[in-house]
Structure formats: C-alpha cells, structure tokens
Image (tube, rainbow, N blue to C red; front, top):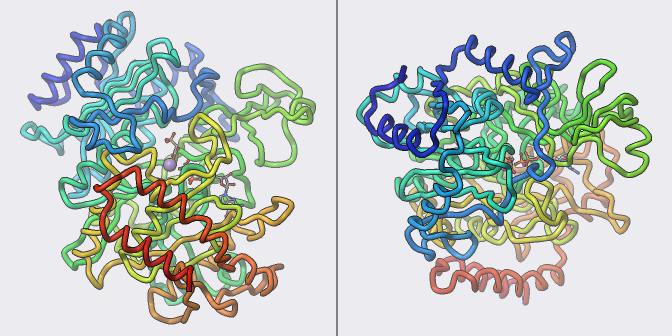
Length: 594
Ligand code: GTP
Ligand code: SPV
Ligand code: MN
C-alpha cells in the first residue's frame, strides 16, 4: 500500500512503474523490521556478507563490480535546458534527448525484480533547510545505504504532506552495470535524477552528490541559499564557547578527517574539543540574525576507508564499529572482520581482497597489490561518532564563523592564508587547484582546477555560481564568515608530507578562529594574510619554527607561474565571468609584480 496520498508523487511513481515493469513494489517505511528483513535477504543472495557479530555488530561487507568503484565524471551530465546554463565545466545533454536515451536504457529493467520506493529527507525532518526526495531503486544495497545516509521512511512523507510538488525525483536502475551505458544525469529544472548501470555509492545514493549538491546547488541559486561540498565542525575552547567552521576540500582530501579531529595533547589538556556536524556536505542559509547558518543534510558518513586508523582518525574508526556497511574493503577470514591499507601494519594472512579472491595478505601486498580498493568506503551512522555535535539534528543549523578552502598541492599553496575580504575569498575558492584522487575514475595525482571543491558537483554554470557567492557576500555584509585557504599536503624534495596534519591541523584552526575574533595579527602577502611564525602554536610537536616558516612561505615565482593557468581557466567562462573575479585576478597580478 502506498505510504502517501501526494498526487505528484503517486503519478510519477505510476509513470515509472509503467516504464520499469517491476515484478514487485515495496515502499520503504523506515522500520527496523523491514530493514532487517532486507539485510537477511541480501545476505542470502550474496549481495552482503554479515561480519563478526561480536567484533562488528550489525556490520556488513559489500563488493561492487570491479568496473564500478568510483564516481564517473565523464558520464555525469547536467541536463539543463541550455548548454550555457550547464556551463563549460559540466557535461551537458539536451533534456528531451537525455530522457529518451535514459528511458531506452532503463525500460523494463525492473522486470523480475523488486522496485523499492525510498522516501527520504535531506536535512532534519521539519527543518526549513530540509528537502524531500524519492528514490526508486532495484538494489537492496542502495536501500540499506540510504537508510544510514538519510532520514527516511514514512515519517518523511507524513511531515511532507499531500500538497507540495517540491520534491526530487530519483530513478536508479542497476541494469547490467555496463560502463558504456552508465549515465548519471541531473535535470535541475525538473528536480529529477536518473542513474543507470552503476551500483557504486556516489553514483547511486541519489540523495548525496546528485541531489544534495548538483540539484541543491541549482535550487540554492534560485532560492537564495547555498549547497556546498563542505564539512562542518564546532571548535570548543576551554571556556566552553563553540565556533563553527565549514571547509571545502575536494574528494578524498581530508574533510572527514578534519571534521572528527582529536586535538593534540597540549590543546586537549586545556579543554579544547572538536564536534562534528558534518563531513561532506553543507547547506547554508542567511539566518534571521543576518549571519550564515549551516546544516548537514546527511545522516551518516560515506567515508574513505584506506588511511583510517586509530591514530589518524580514531573517531571515524569508532564510527565504523557497529551498524556499518563496508564497500570494497578486504575481509579477514580468520575472524570475519575487515581490513584496508593503513588500518594497521598487519594485513590478514587469510584474506579476501576487494575483488573477491582468496589471498595471503602479507604476500599479496608485498607484491604491490592492494587488498582494499583505494576508494573503498564505510557507510556509518553519524550517531556512532564519539564527537558528533549536540547540534547535529538542529533544525536551524549552526552559525558559521569561517569558511576554509583547501586542496592537495605539493608546492605553491602555503599551510594557511586568509583572504583580504569576502570577494577575494571567492576568488581564492574559484582558483583552487588540487591533485585528483581515487574518488573518481581516471588519473590520480594530476593537478586540476577544482573551484570550491565543486567541479564535479555544481549543477549549473560555475560563472553564475561564483556570482551567487558574491551576491551572498553582499547580503551578509560585515556578518560574512571570514574566508581562508589551507594546504596540509606540501611535500619535501623526497615527496614526504612536511606538515604532520590530522590532529595537529587544530593548530591551524586555532589561528583561523583567532583571526575571526581579531585576536591575532598576520603578515600581508600578495596572496593574502599569512600567520607570523610565532602565532602558530607548535608546543609538543617535533616541528621547528624553520619548518613552519618553510610551509608558510609564499613563493612569488611559483605564484606568478599560476597566473596563466588561472587565466586559461577563467577564459572558458567568456563574458559570463563575474567582473569582480577578473578584478581580483588583476589585483593579484599587480601585487605579485610589486
Ligand atoms: P570525500 O569523502 O571523498 O569527499 O573525502 P574527504 O575529503 O572526506 O577525505 P578524507 O578525510 O576521507 O581523507 C582522504 C585521505 O586524505 C585519507 O587517505 C587521509 O589519510 C588523507 N588525509 C586527511 N587529512 C590529512 C592530513 O591532514 N594530512 C595528510 N597528509 N593526509 C591527510
Ligand atoms: C566524493 O567523492 O566526494 C565522496 C564520495 O564524498 S561519493 O559519494 O562517491 O561522491
Ligand atoms: Mn565528498
């Protein structure tokens, strides 16, 4: 029986039922009984493997097809009404052509299968920030992941009611997981997403990148708010005051790690704490007090497994110890637990690698093979996180003091710098560059422009998106958050990371908050304000002031060499480029020439 009487929902579901020809239809009501029954079914079919109930209660392992392990940017399309509205950084397809192509691929593909209808909310149910979606899928894995990553089920529909048509339509069909027919298409003007021939996270958990970033960024543009690829953390000082920070880093560049950071001993002993509100996506609105407020629209973490360990990110590791789904990690057959590169130095001897082959872990890895896929992930409930913020479910969100951009740059970008003002900060975000990672298919380690960490996720022309940022800054006026840029990834001549990173990034956050409070000075450089060497606390760290001076150094020649790349990138946007950004570029060039 349908769980809603909303006509726009029912008529779209009817239309899709007609198209997809499911043998069975199941509404996901969000109850634990229903989810448990689906887990059992998935274990019977082999889609999930139940892990050790004592060591990892409620946890499961899933392996995707080896050709389906990451987002596919080349096959992701923004099907806006015109190519110009999608902009030069997005793939574009004309909407009616796209629908025809996708419906031809998907037609009848639920035959012999069950169509699961997942009603879900991005954001706490009942919050003004929140938006509702319905995802249709033939994958139990998708249902169970969505149950962790979103608020879902009947409660969402009850709160949404029968009148509104303002909800996002999402159709996912597994089909044959054929790479050649894989498409991830967003139709911003229709509030619609269609994803075919994949069963991997970011391509099929439609509430996440497809809705909460691509569709929502477009909605935010039209409605006066912002959807960003940003973590949200609260930094509590010894007086118990909490300041909130949003940070945008590209995929697999450290959001989850920063969001759950454990302060180094010198800070911890004084009473500093970090609270996690979100690790991947922020929705931001100007509040009644004129400040910028943020919610995390998600309800769980779809985090990178490799590199997560008791030292680098104990809070993330703790989050994965119960009720978690692991995707493409290795299985330890001796105790039926999981393993990935960087968990510890002891790969399991009796192991199943991520593709499903039984191997001797130490021998296999010694030959240079990876037991877990570099983009293997955990799907864990946010509530599992030991440092989850008390504001996690807040319907009003948290007020943001600082926005931090960052990426992987071996050279060029210093450890941290502050923009001169909001528009300069927008310029800094718009010219961000970072080395590519395993989060998307394609080459890894290639420097590319990734403005605001949104290049794969902006649902419309990025030039308009930048103008929207500038407009938001104008509305915020002197209540606008201060904007910073960080780089944890500077390397020495041997290619080793210089800055210790992880928990020690708090030392940089501390400077950022002090700058927001006007409590510390800075050195003005051509690119913005850089800390004085004495103003970053290095207590208890094996890192000298000379080392610090090295990572804070702004190399004018390297920055001059950046300019042609920025110009070339900006040129793609032609006359759509906001004048204010061109002016910022001119200013940077002039300052570098001084
Ligand atoms: P998405 O979920 O793909 O959006 O990624 P994310 O930005 O949340 O990345 P995550 O925090 O999972 O980090 C990805 C990789 O960066 C892991 O391999 C981490 O070990 C590494 N990393 C994170 N923070 C630091 C840091 O401060 N220093 C260094 N050297 N590596 C880091
Ligand atoms: C990312 O790639 O930025 C992720 C993982 O957060 S995915 O959901 O696959 O996009
Ligand atoms: Mn992400």
